[in-house]
Image (cartoon, rainbow over all chains, first blue to last red; front, side, top):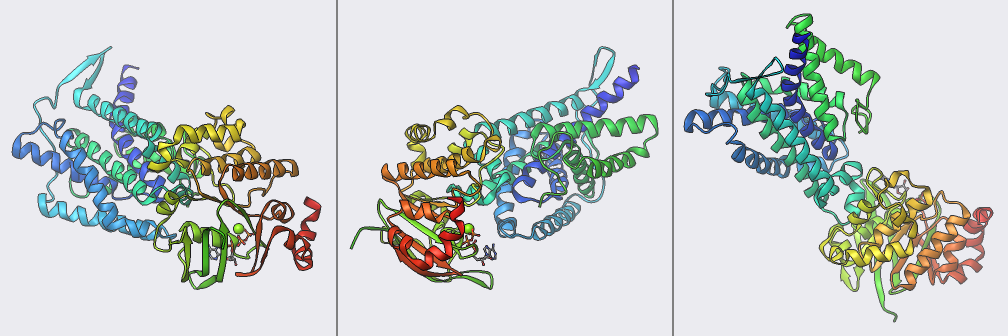
Length: 293
Length: 243
Ligand SMILES: Nc1ncnc2c1ncn2[C@@H]1O[C@H](COP(=O)(O)OP(=O)(O)OP(=O)(O)O)[C@@H](O)[C@H]1O
Ligand SMILES: [Mg+2]
């Protein structure tokens, strides 16, 4: 029993990473109507930046949140205007999707060039620090992931609900043309929500740097996991996406614990298929991931 | 010549290779209600969207207070006071009534008058005040149409273009909506009204235009068109049962 709770706890903590990534996917999907498949690669890129600034300058990963997240936001704005602006205006979503695929492989290979194929991981002084609560052993770094995920979800939620631009983002996710009719610059609104999605990749990159071992190919796998989380949680709801991530973490850890490590991937993709077929809206979503164009 | 707020001059518009408007001209006098009628597919919505800047003409001009708008985007046209209530209302269903209204007053000029505008909208449509915090999508059709018009009013429009306000509404609600449009006009807003309910539209307008398959075919005062045999046969008669 104690170990089941331990498994669940680990699942939630690791699932936090999927949650952050899924919130980003959800935001970007809202206005661009594509699964931004390069999200995982962006996360890996930021993980490398965190890793690199730690190795070169000894900057604590959590301190680098202060630089990486704003950098990611600005990079997101730049990418949107450079790559996606025109494609986002087209009826056919395939162009945007292909651009995202191209971007993913481009960055993967830039990472390979810059940092080689050797997997990286950080070894920080507090890497192995644990706390014990009610007999549960929890690593600080993993607990911090949950903190990052909750903070991200609350910030994005507050942005969407409480700010003018956030309200416009929700409006644009529902009806882009009607948003334009209000005199709102919907290109800018899309750019902002894309940039916040990339900023979240920055947050997740910090998390990834602290607990994962990663290499240049890890991004795609991670993006697919985030997609599974999003399908589970459902589109159009920040906390739903987060919950989907936590749930996926739990499912993976249960599979690993009860049937073996090799079953992790089988369990996640099995659940993915089941959800798409039987629960296309996800658990908490407003709209179906697969139906809505 | 009267003071024209809007002048559309020989406008031609196409969707890709398919032309939808041919040399369409129209004038809207400041302070008036102008009706635009015509069968399904005549090009009424296309014309309104072109005036809003959602569609870009191949040739022709759109003058607002004498200034050519053709190169301005929708945002700048809304800022000048040209606001559309789109066909099908196009409310943000999952947002609250108040959030919808707030989005109507998004631009800085309109935002500066937000409190006044809100009061004005609530005075015109008291039901919106009661349902302020409810989701727009949960309201009845009539209430949704009021919200769609209210959202446009929040932008402080000089010219409001209403596309098929009465679509799907009961005769009583249609009458209510028409009364509200007249009230809005009396308050000083110029109105360009696209309507299927031709009889009522012709009654409240000072001038009307008839479109047919992408062409402007007829214009006159509402009374003249009501008395015109062709118009009656083509449009009023067949819908008479709904009036
Ligand atoms: N998005 C589009 N792409 C291609 N053709 C279109 C598009 N929208 C409208 N059309 C065509 O343009 C013409 C005019 O359509 P429009 O919607 O302006 O007519 P309307 O007068 O508003 O009709 P309704 O009374 O049905 O609303 C029609 O032939 C229509 O098929
Ligand atoms: Mg129409």
